[in-house]
Length: 475
Image 1 (cartoon, rainbow, N blue to C red):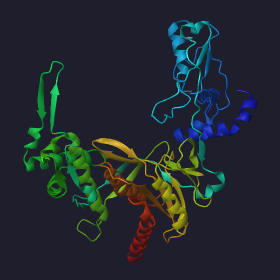
Image 2 (cartoon, rainbow, N blue to C red):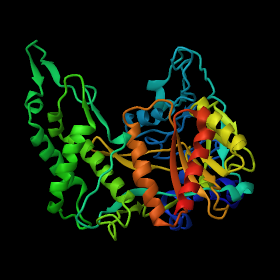
Image 3 (spheres, one colour):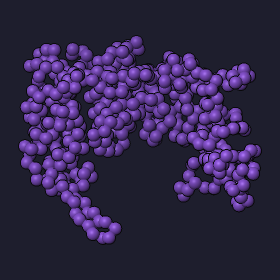
Image 4 (cartoon, rainbow, N blue to C red):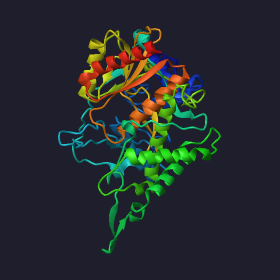
């Protein structure tokens, strides 16, 4: 690779190294080779702001037959013979990407796009039909962290999971609004009619689950919770907790469960639903031990300790790594004294309205903020027996009275409509992620707020701050 190219593409090379360091660690960025740079050039042909942006012609030998994702190929010229026709077809496939994937008013990808193919090896694919037309992609804008706003950088932990220590042999649980569970046919159908191609059919029901006695259901869910959620650090069972878990499960079934649409508690013998019930009961026990004071029975040395399991390869994220291009039109130009990133990419008008509230109405308390778009900030949680990740909308750095040197980091989720999974996300952030990160102690103080009405955002944030000040004064 020539010295002239390295000099010309220095900003793009530095950006590639920064992105590689973020993904794979600083050591990987320091070991970068010319082959790695050439591969990045080929992978980014025609992409603005990347190493291959200025490439107009690629000459390849025994390559580019598959796995080359470039959408700007308009001409393919074959100048030598191929070993098989299959290779010819694979090379032609590099011209199948469209320049624009933006649908028209009818939702269709029009007009049709063609690549011009020349050369004897491609005689099977040459045609004279139609006019070669291209519709350019929508104009894009660069969204990136501005170096001159480095003081507004927001750092956050990259949490891969959680470790919860429940010391002692006593459980205490606290139910809240997210402990409630509505069991309806949308979660699991109770009846299905199946037919084969000859028309013979049968009706499958869950009657064998529906008729289970409440005590059987409670024993099953409590046992599943014990095996899946209440093991020690070595993975050993704690059978002495079962009587308390059984009591908690019965209480949950009696007070927090609502069955509608012909469903019954017996459906919790199904593994997927049992997982969800076990998670809710576990969250309530964690919440109860986190709220337990030292002067309560079992309180001395008995508080639950929630700790994060950090990403081993990239434990810290930062707003300074944000650098992307977007064709979205919902954009907010940020104030130079409030946000590290030049633009906020909005998913709704509500989010842009929230940005205005942050920068103006809350300008006296908000020190900095960032939208979680290509930021890499994720909250791990479990739902329906599987591991998932959610991405909260905003992170605010706030002066809650402790001064700018000890700010509060407020994670904000904007929710216009709360779907079933929303309570799992809120609960994971509020009862797991925030306490775990605060107990870690290496990333400052954190809190979470879900805003359902953006017009009340200022009121809700100031209420949170007032409660925190009052709580600290009382302590």
